[in-house]
Image 1 (tube, rainbow, N blue to C red):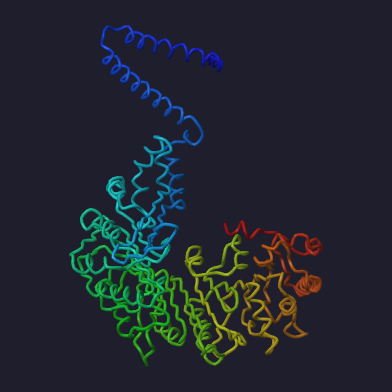
Image 2 (cartoon, rainbow, N blue to C red):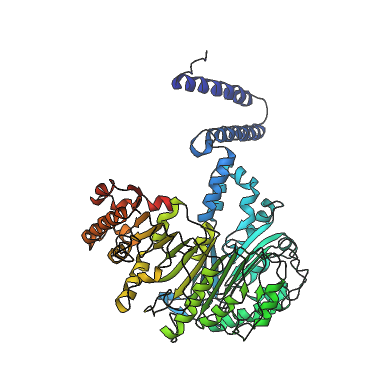
Length: 624
C-alpha cells in the first residue's frame, strides 16, 4: 500500500526547517570563530558559492519536472531539430559611407574607410541559453551541428564550437547570398567563405556543399590554386540563377567555368550528385562529369548562350552506368540529322528535359534517348515568351512528344491537367489519390509521390488545337482511367467550339472504367457524350463503353472561396440521371459515384443511391 503524499504546507515547513537549521549550523560556527574578519569574509564567500551551486542543482532538477523539460532527451532532440528548420540564424549588414557633423550636416571624406557593422542573431542556437538541460541535449547532439542552411548568416567566431560539437560527423554546409540583408549597397567580403571552408579542418569533412549566388574570389584560390581535398564530398550544388547584374553574372560564370575546367580526379573521389543551375557555359569534357555520378542536374541560362553539341552530351551520358536522376534544363543539344541513339543507364529513375523556345530540338533529343520503362519522365516545353508561339510551330512537336511519352510505356491512367499539362500513370492510382488531380501537378510533386509516371508540361499561348487531333495521336486502349482538371475540361470545351466535338478523339479509350470530372465546371458536354450510343441499333456507347465509376471533383479555387458555382448545376444533374438510366438499360450500369464532400448538399445523390453506390471524399485528407 502506497504511503499518501504529505500536504504542500507540510512539505514547505519541513524544507524550511531543514535548510534553516543546516545553514544556521554552518553560519553560526563561522560567526563565532576566532579567525580574523578577513578570513571570515573569505569563508562566507565560499559558503555562499556552495549554496548557489546547491540552488542551481535544485533548479535543474525542478526544470526536468516541469513542462517541456520533463520530456526525455530523444523527444526533445526531435523538437529541437524541428525548431532548427524554421528558426534560422540571421545577420544584417549596416553600411555607411557618410559621417554626420553638428546640426546633422553630412560630411563626406573619401580618404576615410566607410563604416560597417554586422549584427548576428543566433536563431535556434539561442536555445542553448534557456536552461542547462536543453544546453546539454543540444551540445551533445552532433547532428544539430553538422548541417547549416546558410553559413553566411552565422558569426564566423562560432565556427570552432560548431566543428567541435559536430564531432566526427560529415558536414553539410550551404552559402546563400540570395537572402542577404544589407542596409545600403555593399559587396560582401570573401572573408566568411575563406574562414568557413578551411582546407584543413572543414573541407576534408564536407559531405554536401551548396553555393547560392555566392561564387566569388574563393573559387579561384582554394579550387584553382590549392590542391583542395574533398574526400567525403558526395553532393555539390551551385546555383547562380539569382544573380541579376550582368557584370556580376558574367564574373561568376567565368570563375565557375575555371573551376569546372580545372577539376581533378582526386579532388572529390566520392562525388555522386552534381547540380549546376544558371551556368552559361558547361565544359562537357570536365572531369567533374565523371561516370561515377548518380544524379546530374544542369540548368543553363535562359536563353542558352552555348547550346551543347550532340556528340559532347552523348559521350557524357553514355559513360554513366549508375546514373539515377538526370535533369537538363535548356542544356539541350541542337538537333542534327540522323544522330546515333543514346542508351541511358538501366539505373535511371528520373529524367527531366526542359527547353525555353526551340522546342523542336527538345522533342528530337527526347526521341534519341533509349529510356527504360521504370523511369519517371518529365518534359517541359515553354513557348509562352517567344514570338514563334504559333499553332504551326508548337502543334507538331507537342503531339510528337505526347505520342512518344505515351507509347514507350503505355499508361493505364491519363490526367488532362491545367491548360496543356498531361500526366500519364503507368499503373492505376490508389483510391485515396483519386481526388488529387483537382490541383496542378509538378515534376517534383509527382516524383515524390509516384515513381512510375510520365509528364508533359506545355506552356504556350496558342491553344486552338488538341494534342489528340493529328497523325501522331496514340491508341488509348491501354487506359483504364481518365481524368480532367477544371482547366483541362475547359480546354476541351474551347476546342469543341472552334472545331468538331472533341470527344470522338477519345474513341479508342474503350477500356476506361473510371472518369474524373470537375463538377464545378460545365460537365454537360462530357456527360452527354458518355450517354451517346454508337448507333441506334446497338447498345454500345461511343465513349468509354465499359465505364462503371465517376469521380466528381471541385476545383481548389472554389473550395478556397467556400462556394461552388451553381451555373449549369440543374442541367448537369439532369444529364447525370439520364446517363445512369441509359447505361443501366443497356446492361453496362454505373456502379459508383465518388463525390467531393463539398457537393454533399446536392439532392441528386439520394435519388442515385437506388442504382449506384455514392461515397464522399475529402481531397485535403487524401493529399496529406
